[in-house]
Length: 135
Ligand code: HEC
Image (cartoon, rainbow, N blue to C red; front, side):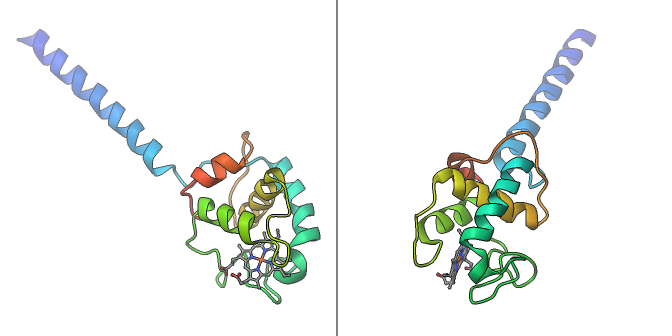
């Protein structure tokens, strides 16, 4: 009797642990770091060269929408949708002209300027497209 109760409690704990891990993988916590600080810095240079004349040196928006803050056209957009849009539509006038690495770096820079923390793993075209984290 005592033994079987232990077994039941033990497997309930295992099941609870498994479901917590599964739901974390599905929701991809927004605090998870998606990019490195080195690539955000590299992305800042690409942004200055290829994006800032329309979107502003401070992402504040000039002839094109702001990319950070309350008026940002990216508010509520997922990283995946932002990457796809940027890599296929931007820079306006010469869309698709950057490499996947440059696009990933620019998205890393935009994320860093929107308050996302850097971490140990680089953002790639593949990981960016798969991410449902909000910009
Ligand atoms: C020649 C001007 C110009 C350049 C350079 C440019 N953009 Fe844009 N961008 C625009 C305009 C205009 C829009 C709004 C029209 C549209 O959605 O197509 C826009 C829209 C966007 C949007 C969507 C924002 C929203 O409100 O929907 C993002 C994100 C973006 N640009 C990122 C970039 C990035 C990153 C770069 C550099 C790689 C870049 N843009 C370079 C003009 C530019």
